[in-house]
Image (cartoon, rainbow, N blue to C red; front, top):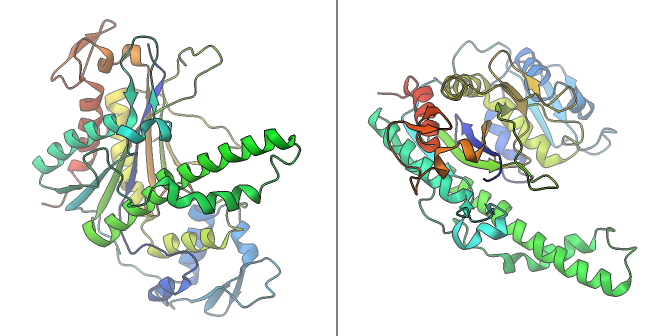
Length: 389
């Protein structure tokens, strides 16, 4: 028996030039491409329903200025000039030819560092990256059969980034020194805790920040797909007794709903503005709904309920929430699909050693596909009608 696991994927309908930290000039191509009405509608309904960003904005006739602070004493970060008319054109047709698959995490020698590795008793160890690569290979075959050009960001267990944890030692030390978390510790305990915190922070900067940035660069500068799908198989935390969590759910995230604490950061303001001006939300939501519908049909899972204070917004009967994903992942990954499965109910831990069997097998009295084939089949079914032929 293993832990409850979640199958997850991120979906991006566009792969435009990546926004560099602090480089507001990247928004210049959007001058006079959006009306005042369109801007406020997207801001209010999609990207910042709380209204927090408006504290940093000053509207004038034909323009809006974005400031770093709410007192607006310094020059604006950016001034956007509005179009005089509402656009009636579809900027991003809902049709995709080039599709990138991004199997989440590194795996292999790095799996334990990433904390994407677990084992229980005499069960075989599980590495999330290996599961993601398996799904990616299956999905690639299905999408190519439907006529798409499919590219993988990785098909092995090597980092995409050229950097390693030791390259972030100085940055990690600086960040941990700025924290007060160990100030009350006795000197020797403080020294030990500091060293451990620096190690962990350097590792996170490597496998999360640097790796994700490297993949975003690969996607945006080399592959340049119409659509990116990032595949994940996650697990919930152990409880105190290391028991299973008997709860299977389905959830979909699309990019949006920046929170008040997030828009205080200028880089988050920039990413919000870029996503808003890109005006890809309608296409992203259509992709999310298509894939979510197929996943719900295949898995028959109930929706996740994060509650009223979750920072997410329900988008209808399809289990879909708007959430700022830029703060947690590479820019341009606006959708997140999640499915939880109890391993003892999963074909992955059946008699088949790899979980790659075809057809159906009896799992606790129910005929089931391999979870990897089920996952890949559902995503492919959702995307098939959106593939340009």
